[in-house]
Length: 319
Image 1 (cartoon, rainbow, N blue to C red):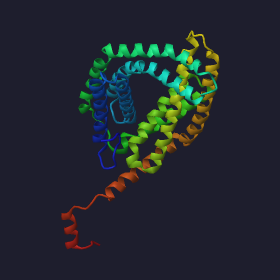
Image 2: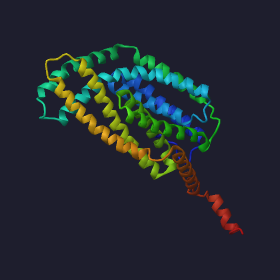
Image 3: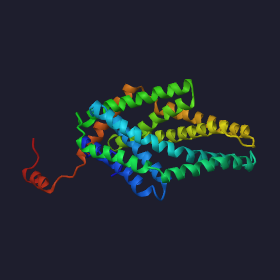
Image 4: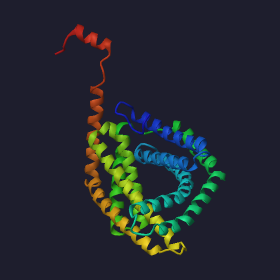
């Protein structure tokens, strides 16, 4: 089933199911796919782990704190190794996107000369990944968490299991945006992006019950996450370029990079103002009302069983 909490599914059951599905997906990629496509396997596994951690944050009001911290720490450890394996790929992809966007503004030789050392680093990283124990080790770590999911005990059900996480995650995102606006460092922008991705994943989970407004909010968050992701990738590439010793005009390339980053940040502030327009308490109240209405609608749309319909027909309307 998709990564969602359907309106006709018990919250406890949906959380356990979604948690299992994400870790099954991560384990499957790292076990079955990493030999043929290590980059794709790592990317897919990282995404599944991020969704799993967002699910934990969403249910913080229902999962015991000790259990939640234990599982989150295990997932964070597993994700750290996967993130390291991705950086070399991202820098090359980002450089190629710059070359395409600004074709003709710098000689192609500038991009090619920078690309050569980055390509060597990428190839070395791929070789290490193929030969390392990262896949098997991470698979064991994630499988251990997956095996414990059946023992998760949510202390609340329904909206009560989700409300605390919904409001807290929204508030953290608003604060992270304000901090990034005050001082838009690479670290601050990345911290904001993590909170945006959390809220995006959580709005995807809640949209089947909370309706079209939540789906629209999720689309805006998805776009904002992509914009902030591109901004981060440019920042990582910029830091590497300043340490790269090549004979070409790196300063001119950095100037183009800075121009593109300024464009992205302008879009990010505008999107951020929209997705974080409400105060946290107002947002949480609206989500609670949407959730209740969506669940009530799901109940109202349940088909009447034939035996119940026959009984109602025989007895007629009641006063």
